[in-house]
Image 1 (tube, rainbow, N blue to C red):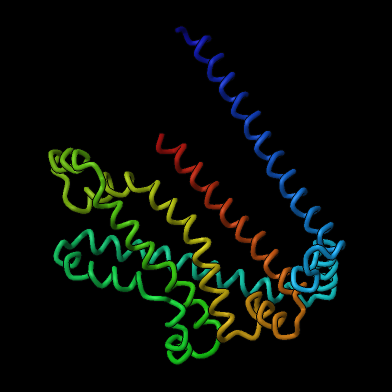
Image 2: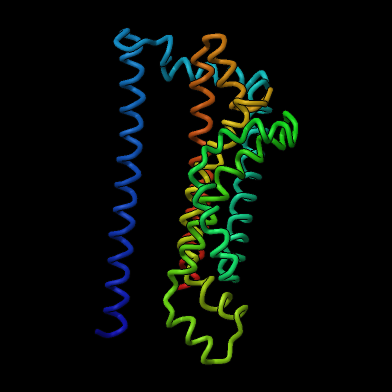
Length: 268
């Protein structure tokens, strides 16, 4: 097959892939519209409890009211800030701990059972400890976000380090590479897909941790709005908060997916 034929095959593949992506996007959009439309119809027809589940037009109306009067954005900003910080700290600390454990086989044998215990422990139970240590404020919420993601990050990335093809390590050793070079040239590049997959998981875990933290201590943020909405039986406010969380979490996830595509294309 000559070069022009290869280019034609590649172009046909790209066109087919583009059509598939458009079909997926259109199908996803139609499903969302159908879900919202059915929700609206069932609520207005009293086939589901509109007091509890509200309905899309009412949620959109409350969202617009709170957006225009300026009462919503401060809560959104605080929660997004806490989540991003918790996401970054959890990922960085988990990666650092996994690296230290891989670097020292002795440390690995010592800490491995503790990691298993820490992973099985319900992180929400640590909330009172964080409140005592950091006070009922921003630091406690961030600490909760970090606690939920850091152990999962450590275990996943360390397991990925151990599963790297030993042949890669032997090649670097044969060329006279030390442990630092083995990690930089063999271990880390081979585990990029796992690190990126862990980032995707951490998006959700960070949101869970921050919202739970706001349930416990915060007087602002989306978690606070959810609790307040339940207390005053304003379930439309709860749905507004949950909808914002879903949208912002999706944006964060798509950001990680974009980073994954960029890094994957560089390593090809």
